[in-house]
Length: 397
Image 1 (cartoon, one colour):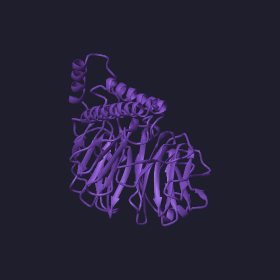
Image 2 (cartoon, helix red, strand yellow):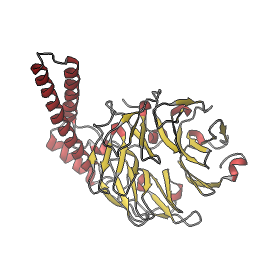
Image 3 (cartoon, helix red, strand yellow):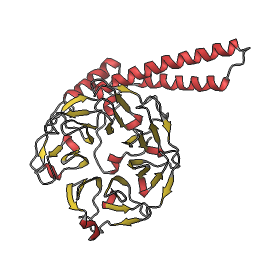
Image 4 (cartoon, helix red, strand yellow):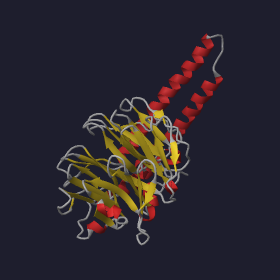
């Protein structure tokens, strides 16, 4: 079984469904009944105490900020001094990540295969996609993979026969193994398979091109601004289907993905081809951040890694802590603020780590965003704002 994802480690309630052994018709009826009465069909409730809810991520564009969390709760405000407003959201499932395109358009993703979009700066959201549609994409992708692998297998046999019977047995064995695996996944697919998948991050590098990643190796791609999505999780270097946790991009338009079991991958051509990142680590990585030509990835038990060559090689950094690191953002051009489990707050200046955590504050911090002089953090008890000057005065609240 895959290890716990970031949201589980933050003590969140992950909604799940049983896998039925009934006929497909019976399963469809049960799944439809579930969806008809579940969080995918019911709008998030307005709550006067919403700011004290569990929030998982915050993003900003210029001064506008959006914060997302459990029960479909999304907050938006125009600047750091304005009041948070609860957005109109059509689902009650947990929202895990958000990404601004501009001051009007943003995307959010969450549990049960949900993808949301806003075109008015975050005040109103529409559901673009959910787990029922994801099941269809999984089925189509597996069927296409089986056809392609079958053609490759038959071609390899013919080529060997034409070449004086010198068949490459290792190549045939590998293709046969991949074909058997794809066939098994297709046979094992149920109508509620997509609902069981949570999305953990979303990234749009242009208004048209975007990626969504999540549990069990889920990866979706759009080339037309989210009007259509393709499942590409079986086409990337993640044969074990490990959870994919975080996305980022650099100034050269390289896109980087990290996940569990030290998994990392990158693309330099908008997903046409992917290369594996050789990170010598078998634990989960929850985030990855860029600073010029430098990459930093972090995760379980304070583990952190750095690359100075666009992910070709990685060096382990001794953070001096064993807390899980969930998120990070740049205080300035040289200092990275990392936050995580047990109220962790850690500043890295490129050479040394300074642990500024307060002993009296042990609540998990799920994300951090630096907006001007403000340090905004989210967690299991809502959000907090502090000034960077408070870092010098012994840490954040």
